[in-house]
Image (cartoon, rainbow, N blue to C red; front, side):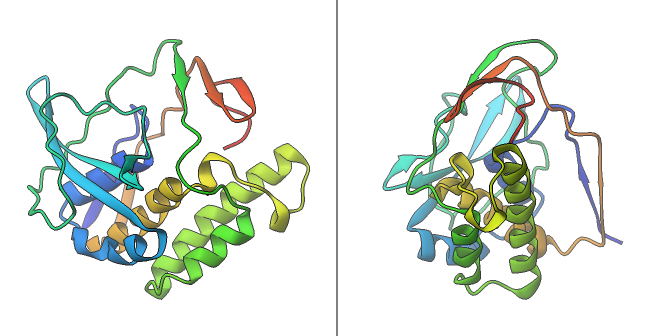
Amino acid sequence: MKTLAFDGRTGASGDMLIGALLAAGADAEVLSPIEDVLDVTYRIGETTKNGIRATTVDVLVDGEDGDHTHDHDDDHHGHTHDHEHAHDPTHEHGHEHDHSHEHTHAEGHGPNRTYAECRDIVGEMGLPEAVEADAKAVFRLLGEAESRVHGTDLEETHFHEVGADDAIADIVGAALLFDDLDADRVVTTPVAAGGGEASMSHGVYPVPTPAV
């Protein structure tokens, strides 16, 4: 039985999840449909922090990094996804979550979209049935959270950061890589929500934020 274990005690981001799945043995080639539809590029590399090696992933939109806020250290070597990866399951977050600090969350790259538009884009990627269902389920959960917070109809709910190209690439990419690993079960620790404040499209909010 193949078990996928996720340690969420230090939180996670889309690029970190993708990096961890690649390090666990997923094939980067399965990300190609996303690059074709969204015109994004996955830059995959490695870094070492405090003697621990990890896989890094940056989603490039129009040649720019869609995740400004992640610093992968000076020894990050960027390259496209056809690189052969070491299967090291360790991916380490760059800061602590047990004290208050301020985060700056980028708006994301590319157009911001409604829930319905994100769902339709996923449907146009030609994904395996299970992957498409997983990705759409994630967007539905996010859309339902946003619609409750903003008091809008789900189909008309407008995403900000989550509707950008790089965020879609994070969500669908993680779903594809998870499917490629073909795990029999998944176990996880509770996911740390963090603390402090986050600056986003609606202003500065406490962490965890009331919406997505």
